[in-house]
Length: 546
Image (cartoon, rainbow, N blue to C red):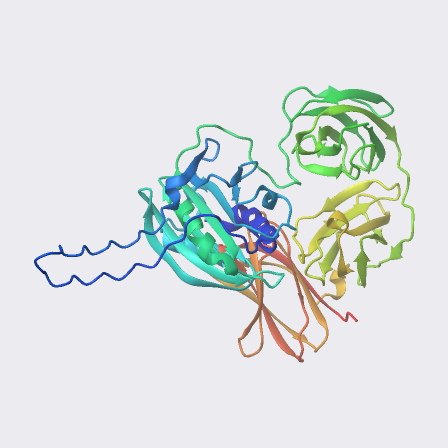
């Protein structure tokens, strides 16, 4: 199975919630030791023989479970009556409803199920599929499989189960139980987790929940959950709009209001969305592909302002919707031009880099752009807790492109090719006002250590060797073709593996920032996820980051 599209959301949720789990009694009966049999005394004329007492049975947790069925996911399973189930995107059960959204609550257990086509797995052998899945879990430090994967049957379906131990980012040891279940052309992955301190209370319950899972064909079709930067072209009514006008409307509950705009390349517009009670989200989509090219949701109520500069002539769609499906009144004004870029800007030339620390603020860089020439901006968090975002603006303050494809500690890359000469601006910020250290660089292809295209055959790798002095940072950017999911590995001269990187999905860049502690030759291998080959470009340079 191509694991990452299915598991990244699951793992992000578990990594969010594991620190919230701690000691707390489940309230269920625990297994008792089996009492030793009483010896039968020798028969006498008066008393009858003493009966041997029966062993106390292990509690049947499932006997008191409530059944949950998702027609959209084709999943049925049981869970404790006092737990809470949420199926907004995938199915989550928690011993306390606060665990579904408040990471400060330190009690209980969490359980997640995701279902999909079995063709997404590279193997339909349950044990092999679960082994592959566990390799991508990255649940925490010192993750280790302590039992399994063991092939079994769950509700008459082929399955495998494994138990995993590890340590969360906050230092709390945890135990997790995971399973893969196959039923024809459908499959499900389930994982439950609890702190190690409450393993005896929660692990039997989580295992019992796994053993109730039934996988079937969905009977209700739902709109697929997509990454935030890709949205289907909206269907339904689209209201023609024009620059220079103001529009009023009402966003329906769980709906949106859509406008179409015909825009001219390199001509900035400013959209002002005013609300009194609605927490509104404003999005601009490419009218052909439906991908989001700009969006804003900075305030809870009041005004949202979005300055946008299209890079091509054509039709664009403006979506007005409420956060979390809320509805309410709004006024949308579309003006020509932008407000420009205000505040301090930091010069950043091709071949240079800049290192700094965000403290809940934003940093803005100005760099030159040449029409038709690609400038690659690379943003690398050096703080593993920083979820960094990167956006490029024109001189009017109009957003041209913005990315936030990585999680905390993962790099962001924008290969930017302007269609007119001029100064452009890069904004670096932490997601939701996050803080942490980073560096941003514009590698110069003319003086790069390597700047070329390559190909990786199936089950093989491409190899590049670099001499890197101690303390210097080797920066490698690999941009794979659309169907290629690249994996980067670093080895020392003796063949010892030093680092492995696979942050992106198919077609997404991988950025390696490697700083050795000793001078030497270091090999970078480029391979494909689970052995699949593909095409790529590689750009490598060295930096001295103090």
